[in-house]
Amino acid sequence: MAALPETASSDCRLSVGDTPGTDWDAFVTQITGASLYHLSGWTELAREVFGHRTLFVKAQDAAGSLVGVLPVIQQKSRLLGNFATSVAFFNYGGALTADPEVARQMMNRAAEIAEKLGCRYLEFRDTQPRPGHWAMRTDKVTLQLELPESFESLSKRLGSKLRSQVKRAEREGVRCRTGTKALLDDFYGVFAENMRDLGTPVYPKRFFEAILRRFEPYCQLVVIDWHGEPAAAAFLTFWQGKAEVPWASCRAKAKPLGLNMKLYWELLSLAVGRGCRLFDFGRSSVGGGTYRFKCQWGAQPVPMYWYRWEQQAAGHEASTGEEKGKAMQLATALWQRLPLGIANTLGPLISGALPW
Figure (tube, rainbow, N blue to C red):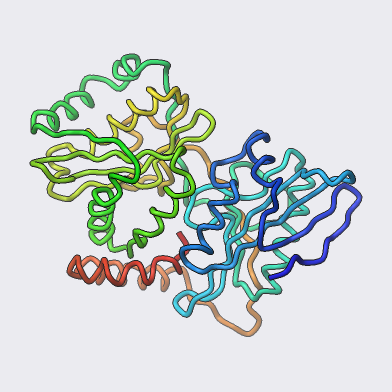
């Protein structure tokens, strides 16, 4: 898609293209409030791995300097139709600017483009309140833990009960390994099995290969071995003093032994060792099992401001929330029953079309 016509306003000039431009990442690294996923390469992954359309909304001042960016990924499939996200596959995105008015203008411009592209909705995964009359999802929070300067201090804060659960796993003779590309196969094996058990189609391994190819310095894989085979594994990212775990998994047979506890113990230790002051456990539904698991580490819920523009469906009756929920429960239950080999073959064909 060629760059769309620029839109002028009294405050800035907006433009939209399918490439970010050479000044995009420099702007992201310098502005407060940026997430790692605002870097252009994370949006380009969606095009590289899944073939999705990418849109880069830019706001420039009168001198031509960037004052705001907004990455968007359009997903279009027979499975779930046509929709867009800033940004898909990750927790954070949305308008990045120091000026709320510039944010509003970029969001409005992105919504105009989404409407022209026939999208059912456009979701902005923001971290702060934004001006405008947007629908907002309230079903998710992220859980974050402030980290001390030493792991010894954190260990004391976590308490004896949690430490005893970790020691239970250590008595099994487990081994912890850290790395990046060399551990990808071991990480992916655990991750794929866990996703099948959850009833969710797994990402293709090439998705993680592409991440490590572009962003290896920002990433760390952690694998916990038990009886010589990977039993728990996680994928960590680092950005400006924050560690985040977008993906963590434990084989079902290893959970009663506390290997999931050992995994997170190692993740926190690694984050403190790298000088991080915040650990992001990722998003959860309030009150759910993963929510309670993360809270036991002292993590605190932080609101996620996920705004939506939605297409007005004239003459079309959408399924009710209850109907969609029942359909999702049925699909999940069926997927959980699939043999692992079949799930790992079909999952990569489907996962790129899902609204992660």
